[in-house]
Image (cartoon, rainbow, N blue to C red; front, side, top):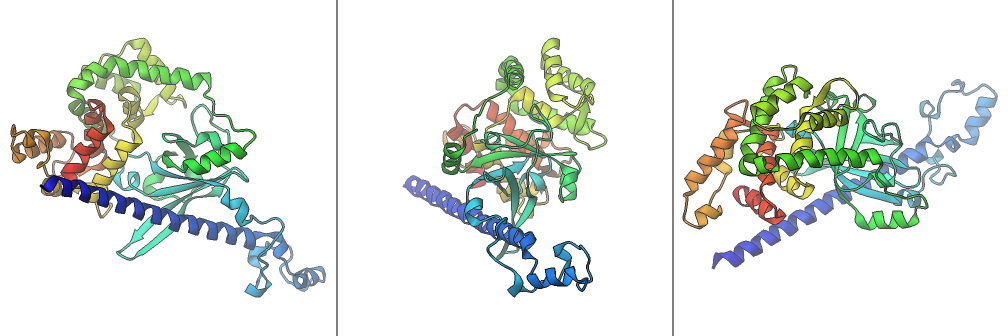
Length: 413
C-alpha cells in the first residue's frame, strides 16, 4: 500500500525542486539585466552633462580629461535612454545555460553557476547563485560580461559563438583574467561544463543567426575516435570491476600528486595503468597523450586523463551525484565525515534487500568498505572520492533511470 504514496511523494518532491530551481534562475536573470543595464547607462559617454562640457571647456571642472567615473554626477543628471548603451531589447536576445566547474574540489564542483551568452555582441557572463543563511540569497558575477576566447583545445584563441553552447560543452578561461576564489585560481585554466541549456532560446537565436553552423573540425573527430577506441578496449575489464578500478586509480593519482597540482607525468600514468592491469596499446596511448597534452608540458590533469580512458557519466546522471553530495555536505566544505555517510545511507530499497538476499546492514557495510578503500583519509570522504565511486558504478549500468534510482534511494533525493 505504501508504494503509490512513495511514487507520488517522490514526484511531488521532484516537482518542488524544479520549481525552486526555476525560481533561483529567475532571480539570477533579473540581477543580470539590472547589472548590465545599469553598467551600460552609467558608463555611456553621453552622460556628460552640458554643464560639465561648458566647465571643462573653460577649465573650471578641475578634473582635466578624467574618466567620467571619477566625476561627480547626481542621479537627476543621469539619462536613462542613451544612443550607444545596451537596451533591454538587445539584452533579451540571450541564451541562458547552467554550468559547473570541472574540479576535484567539492566546494567548487558544487557551485551553482548560471551563464548567459548575448547574441547582440557575442559576449557572455556567468553568475553564481549564493545562499547566505536561511533567508538571504544573492546572484553574484563569477565571470564578468565580456567577449572571451577559448583558452585551450582545438579552438584556442577563437571567440565564443553560438555553436559553442550545448550540453556537455567545455568553456575555458584564463584564471588570472578573472576575480575568482583562490581555490579556483590554483589552476591556470578554469573549465566550465555546460550542463543544461534553454533550448527554446537556442532555437530562436539559431533561426535569427545568419552565420550559425555547428561543425566539428577533422581534428576534433579524430580525437574522439582515439578516446572511443581506448574506452572500447577497456570496456570488458571495467564492466566487471569498474568501481574498484576507478576509485583505486583516483586514490593512486592523488597519492602520486605530491605537489597537489592535479597534474602528473606520462610515466606516472603508464605505471598506473600497468598496476591496475589496464592494457592499452602503446600507439593508442601515444595518440591519447598527444591529444591531452596540448600545451606540450609532459603533464596532464589526471581528472581529464581518467575521463578520456573511461568515458564520463552523462550530465543527467552527474546532476544526481552532485545533488546527493550537496545534501551530505550542506556546509559546502568539500568533504563529509564517514560517520555522516553511515548515518545517512539507507539500503532499504536496494534490490538485494527487497529480494531478501541481503540485509540492510550488509549492503551498507559493503558500500562503506568499497568507498573507504578509495579515501586518502579514513575518516572523511571528499567530493572527488564520492564522484569516483559513482563514476565506476555508472560504467556497468546502461539505463539512466536505473542509475538514478541507485543514487536517489539511498540518499533520499
